[in-house]
Length: 464
Ligand SMILES: Cc1ncc(COP(=O)(O)O)c(C=O)c1O
Image (tube, rainbow, N blue to C red; front, side, top):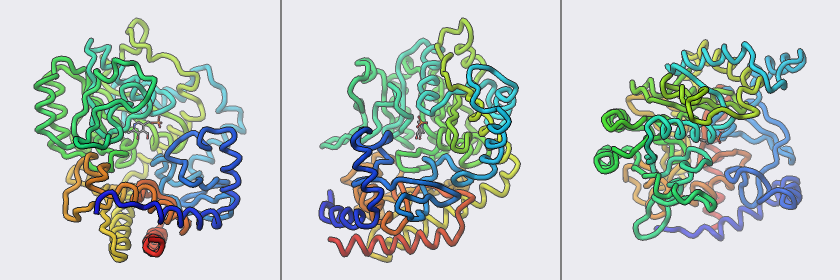
């Protein structure tokens, strides 16, 4: 069965959800009057309407209808300690009360401490902070193009590096006879971008070799995630990442690891260390700041120097760069993760493993050919992330976003839309079928996730 039609099921689930969440429905009607589509981030705008959250603590968020929702989205994977962890809210509240935290426009000692920590924990020589992952990857690409004097940017089809010109190519698979990632994702982009970005295929070492043989002399950088996130939570094959390092070095291109999700999610530092691969530049955000807006570009001192006076790369602004409250959160978070690394990561990885197997087991028990991605490999050892795919061919190996996002290969709508809405009716929130585990989750929460998956699957079957 390919291109399954879920229209009838979605209509039935939506009607039930209207009854389940009348206050969120009303808030959405008001939101639509002022906010485009009712919000400011498409992934959050669950259809027919998202739950409007009133408060959050640990593994749970509470919506305006009073539902206590078990959350696996956890701030776009930023939360390692759950929502509003006292480890962060305590120092932040204390700082605000003492007159520190909202004074932007200056430098202070805290930035130096955070920079030292970030460099030490990520194995970088220099770092510069900014306020979002999108800006970090944009600056990293500018630095690479400035450093090499070249224009081509290689990325992975299906890789999401945020909304910046070179990142807005090859994010969604364009359907058709030869489904491809080689296209721009947005109107309004500079025309040159379509020609300046080449999409490689994740974990396809042979293709990478061919692309570098053909274009290597003109490639400024290859940007990729060591564990790809929105492309389906697939761990990079160690041989692929080693080849990426070797080929970029051989052709005089820079290797950029986008660790906006991976950094501090798999260890208290860069995930690249788990592979023994050192990129020229890396970007960090999310877990590093524990939910506060902080992002960083870090790496080789000679490349980073281009951001400095006279360096020529305009990575120099940002009203909220090094925002004091964000810096305090980053310092607190990084110190906490480093001090408790030996307890935190084994715990969330074990919960991740149980969650992936529980979700698969529950959905399969109800007759769905579900599989969870996010499994670790020999390099990363353990993983606290996951997504659900429904491959039409149950035994097919899933190793690249081409497979995860291709509606000919996997039932994408069932995973991303139908299952999400059905689980919301069980007061469980997932994105792409799952999300991530935090220290705030318990094994009882994972059991509840399993029960919710079974109930959601039954609900879907009943609505067909
Ligand atoms: C790997 C990766 N890079 C960059 C970004 C963009 O980060 P931000 O949303 O903070 O702009 C994201 C966001 O999800 C991401 O997952």
